[in-house]
Length: 279
Length: 306
Image (tube, rainbow over all chains, first blue to last red; front, side):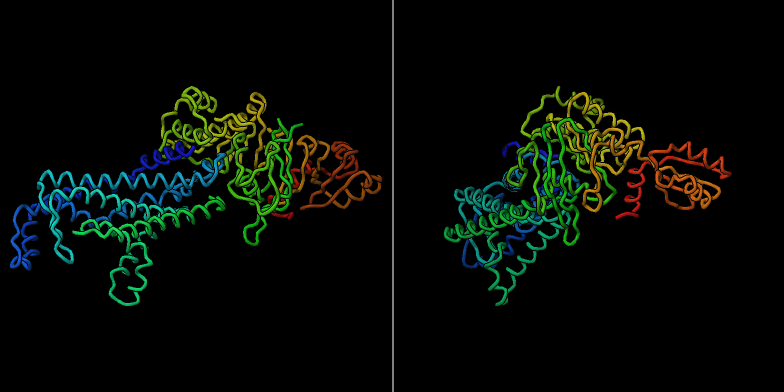
């Protein structure tokens, strides 16, 4: 039964126009971004590497597809969650708005199964979206700018050899998928409380943005709170672009993210089981 | 007779408001059961409890002698329902909506089965149209189609004629009669229209403020003997005096309402009373029958009686 329910949920998701907004946006924006970087990326790289230019001799094609894909990966933090939330926020509330809860829940199926199927469908959507995002970031960049070593310049310089890059990207996308599952779970949780998708979408994004700001603020009080906010662990994908990956940190972050998924799922399940359908 | 649906002391509160108050219902196989009450009487809340959309605060629901609970909804397999207006996935076609809703019942309907049911409700020619292009009446008919698709024994219809034009209302009523007579279904029909229930139901209950007011066979409750005649006469006092003089007061119940004489009599026919008034110089401008239940129902729907 769960397979049937998930397939129905997926059918509903992919029959809605809003589902494709993210695909269209990234489908148009990422090639544009690649084109822009290919035009002015060398100037950007020169500026950034000036400070180490006296100590190191940098050779080879650094403005390559991997470098651009890494830059695009930054969109995972805010932009991707937004498009994921557009769908997740509608998973439950959409049924309330349309009045279809009445059609769905008078069927002889346990509400728990409905919740599980909606969550799984949301996760599948997130997976497909990340897959699309990965494809759009990697394939056009590598085709247009070629391959090479990956230079990462954030708070330090890291140079990853070409043969060592692909698996790091794969793990980064997989960990980003886990992060997006937290977004799906939070959006679904909010969505299960109300009958209009706008609230859950705005609410989820507000939580993510506020938590990210708190994570960034260099004040003692926020630094104390920061480890308790799930957004701190959503950047786990960055770990894979350290020269030496701190696996302990990766596992810890992934476990915390999974813990949040379970928590949000549990609350949704508990409240939805008892929810009076009055729409 | 097999009991199809039974509720025992069913109660639902929304904060301080008691929407359904200790409601006992019993519906037998083959019944077309009219569930009548004014707007806000608790009909939809009851139906939502019967279909597991909301859970009662106390009391029990038995469907086919099996208790309905959040952990046991399996018995809903034998129930088809429309709760309030039938809403569908507007971005999907009528066919796809039915297919999806049937699959949730665990059945994989064939194309033939879906088309047959669409044919039955008169929507076969629109099977491939998106529901967002449907009129309210078409959605109601599609609602009936989804309620019938899994061949249920009990069909619960919550005000299925609301918002329809007279032709559409008649169509739905005919469909209900057809379901009961030709397909042998038990129908639980909620309505706020007495004449609608009268036309299709064999048993009925009236509720108001969540409580049962009256229950019984439609025939008995709407018996033509229980008729009030409203006389519009030239002299009310003289009319009452005449009834006194003729010693008829024992046989008739009367009251004056809105300068008209309301008379309930099972012994003296209205035309005899008419003759009597006229023969004694009292002009009768009009007299018209009004059934007691109808009057009673009008009073509660207009809020005169709580």
